[in-house]
Image (cartoon, rainbow, N blue to C red; front, side):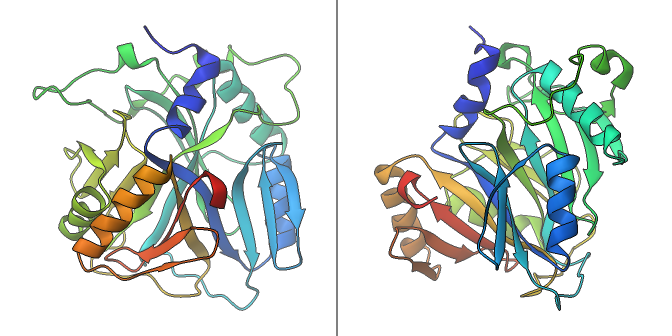
Length: 294
């Protein structure tokens, strides 16, 4: 049985390890906050002077860290795009129209077989995907029985016919960060870290220079590619990705993850709230959080 539309985002967020809020270093926080509010419909949840947190009424999706002196590093390891997952096709159509009404332009639109997606960038060039999943029983399999994905033209006109009239001003409450796509330095090293150490399953490795990993049979919680960044590591303090958050479903998942990190000899820090901070082989910072430390 496919999950009801209203339950799909909850299913993604309840996987053993899933994607969480994305923290960005930004030079002009006010401009970016306006973009995320008006073009994406996110709610401003808090501003402590250093960081603006935006999301739904119940969860953070994006955190903007004020870094006025940060320099761009577009070809370094870091963010390729953050991906907001909408619960229904109508919600995705609404999101596209909402962005257009705010003056945002799409960079692309794709049918990935498992999902429908559109792409855009925020005013500082951070990539954003807006997407909705097809029901799992519609996901095709490849010749080895694994999930098949592709990048095909999306019929945006047909998608927009599902939009609401009028378009609601904000995102649905069960919108989540469905996945995070990273630029990395080396696919082999990334595969060893995300699959063998963190415990993700390899879902798709048929795209040249790319890898998609997940838990709980999802098509991907983390995407990785070397298309722009081969051989380049993250630049500390640069504009763009400050850290990506991975959500650990419970204490047992956290324990197993920490044990694998220790067994692999990977250095990490633990904070008082239980969050674990670690850097992947390309120097990208990951914050691993349980429900109590988000």
